[in-house]
Length: 137
Image (cartoon, rainbow, N blue to C red):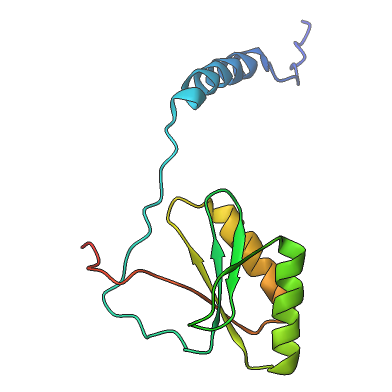
């Protein structure tokens, strides 16, 4: 009597079929996924910003303005000139604080790029201006 040898191979065809079905399902459903929007909260109480702080305003079109003191007029600057002005102020006064103010319609990336530029310029005290209002609960 002749003995049968066992077959030591795995049949992967069913696994490939399942993988292809899952791939089609993900390809069909991926465009339907809605991206969520982030509504940043407002806060009840915020400490007042320092009166000697420089204010960098980021406008929706990407324009940057700088106000040296609370009573001074705003100057429209490009990114390089803004960094030069802030570095000059920080070299004169190492504890100089800078506040970034931006409208809520400004891209988050523009605000973060400005914050990163100020940090790289050596500014240690950088804050973000917020709106005082009732926080949603």
